[in-house]
Image (tube, rainbow, N blue to C red; front, side, top):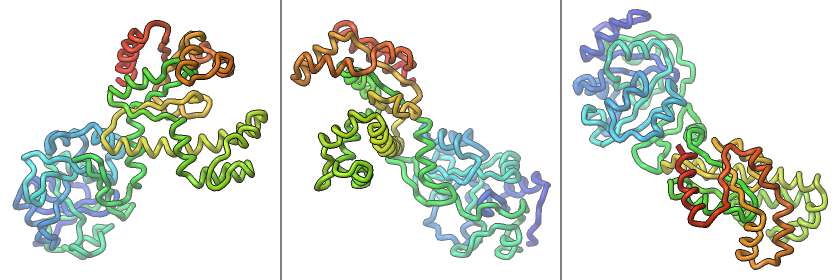
Length: 400
């Protein structure tokens, strides 16, 4: 058999694949050895030509996310989100396989990897062939992956029907493989796409609600309603105190800026307070340090939530807007309440004096500030039962 070199006649290449032949195709990473992924005989040829162990499954090349439902079942929204972010591109998404996918492709398993190559020639070939391609890299198992049509011919001249010569492949590194068939999602093979970019893409498509408001307004009630809707609730005060217990880097940076405020691995809060609370510039420096660490930790937790299949989250912070954390959020909800009600709640909750409660609340921003800066206001100016009902309604609305 003479191996054809095809440059523009994609209809001829498509006909070969539909007939059960093997055709090497270019991608943005390396050349792949393509056959009809729904044809058992064609797939058997791929294993034979490559010398690939039969226990190793094959992925399928598809023209876009619309093909997911044809070859997979129980497709999570995360798969469509990643396809929107990175397809065409060097990401293989593993999903539960539909019955149409032959057992030999799955190597006896229950999942299949899908890949949408970022190369115009192969995308056009997929559209014309109208079948998914089983297409591992076009090299004998264990040999270097081919980046040119000449590399493929060096390996398989006379052993496959054709090579679509699309020029040199740009990246030369195989695709990243992410398993979305179960939670937590995981990277099966690092590749051309960095792992952090994969999880960040899921976070960017997560619905994130920012919640802010002064002490005693009732944010906890509203946050509980969001949590019942499946949102991950992140309390920035809690995160900060946990970081003070766990982050040597944070403490070191505070000590470097404010010498004498860290002793025996613990922050001396009173000492630090005496420095910053009467010096706006020092307080700004402290906030810049803490906000950076808090933001980094929030992003880490959001990535973990996305990997667990989470689709929504809430970030709770009094200084949500001033700190820049609002930039992580899709919508900002301000919770407000009358001054007297807040004072009474604070006295009851913390056992403080009325004078202390008044001074603490009066030092915070007024309700008018939150009305001006938030996308949505929920007013806690009635009974607890009424506020709980209102919280349930608003939580469903803002998470849509």
